[in-house]
Image (cartoon, rainbow, N blue to C red; front, top):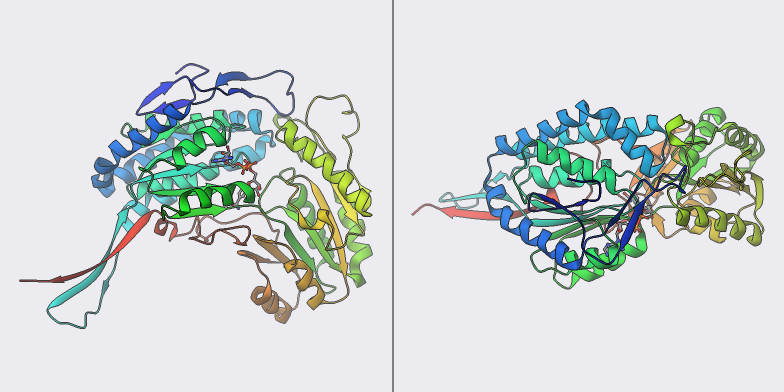
Amino acid sequence: MTDTQFQYIDGEWRDGDGDDDLVVRDPAAPDDPIVSFTGASRSQATAAVRAADAASETWAAASPEEREAVLYAVADRIDDHHEALAETLTREEGKPISSSRAEVGRAAELFRFFASFARTAAGETLPSSDPETVTYTVREPLGVVALVTPWNFPIATPTWKLAAAVATGNSVVLKPSSETPMIARALVEHLEAAGLPEGVVNLVVGSGSTVGDAILTDDRIDGVSFTGSTDVGRHIAATVAERGLPVQTEMGGKNPQVVLPDADIEAAADAAAAGAFGLTGQACTATSRLIVHEDIAEELTDAVVARAEDIEVGPGMEDPDMGPAVSAEQDDTNFRYVEVAEAEGATRLTGGGRPDGRADDPGYFIEPTVFGGVESGMRIAQEEVFGPVLSILVVSDFEEALAVANDVEYGLSASLFTSDMASARRFTEAIEAGVVKINGTTTGSQIQMPFGGMKASSSETQKELGHRAYEFYTHRKAVYRTDP
Ligand code: NAD
């Protein structure tokens, strides 16, 4: 494999031969490209699907021990190359190196967790109404699955799809974001080195509209798992819907943290700052709306603004509190939403500019930004920014807080800070979100817990993560066997 080879098709590393010239940049120093390469063509994407299809029968027939062993070996390799992988991730995505280390560590954990699916993704035997007939279900792999992933958790997200798919006997075509191809390539290199048979995992890097479309319209694809923006997810779901394929789309968010007067205000402020700014706001579960009771609005606002102003922003390799935005496009989006919010009449309480001393820095840096005086109908309260921009909305009671929290098209993650059990219970029941936290940040999840949104955040086909994530990647057949 050379520096420009990002396509891994049927066990071979290749240069792309498509029309897209792609450049990988360090978001902290984008003027100095890390590598330039050619994206895959449609015919390479098709070749990747063909290779996955050709490998699928043998891999489906591989023993649970064989599938499990490969995934454990990948986990060990990730541990052995932990620091190099973390640096690759930070160089192209920009997040603080300690966050990359945590994400790489999580990838190894995910491989170990999903390796167990090889042995445990089981059917069940059910009581039969007919004593002559045995009734049971079996799980079988879908076949070839397409995995389309974003840049913000560029090793964890491909891993939690791929490991679950491969453990359950599927072969895979992975199309990662073109913003973060180096970490995707490194991941696939470790799969190859761990002994995964040729064709079981294929990697194609190129524009979504070219290679994504070639993969998704190929008849040999048996299922699609997508994580990314709501617009693209809906387009993908519509593209494959007419063929009736299983499709899982996990998409955008506009996640609320509600704070009631009986809450621990310091803990709520810590959580809001961590949730809004921790990963430069580039988490689908990032806190973007702080919905606060009027009795504590001033105190909490001051506490959050103080924390925002304390955050050190800088290049990810220097391990600051907050790194740059991932790309020029995301950088533009962040500053555009600062203008949108001000034009709508929101009050900029802090941030919204380049950090001190970085006015002429080419890096995509922005100060942690907090807006007050936000009303629920404003665009800044409705649309996903995917940057470190927090809106504070003041309400006069809990029911209003709930109504405001639910007053968006999204429904991914939501949090409530309170010391009252009845409020916690009411919130858990009434909030329209796939992930609910009581006295915790909207961000963060445990891998044994199912993960996914509601409303415009998810197709709600089947949750990712958790001990039943194999369900998406398997058919379930109901068998009635009457012995002759
Ligand atoms: P994106 O939707 O722009 O891209 C996601 C992937 O889809 C990329 O690989 C992209 O190349 C591909 N793609 C784009 N157009 C395509 C097309 N027409 N056909 C096939 N593939 C296509 O998202 P992004 O900018 O990479 O990531 C940010 C978004 O992801 C945010 O909206 C965020 O909320 C969301 N996200 C959601 C979750 C979740 O679990 N719900 C997790 C992380 C990120």
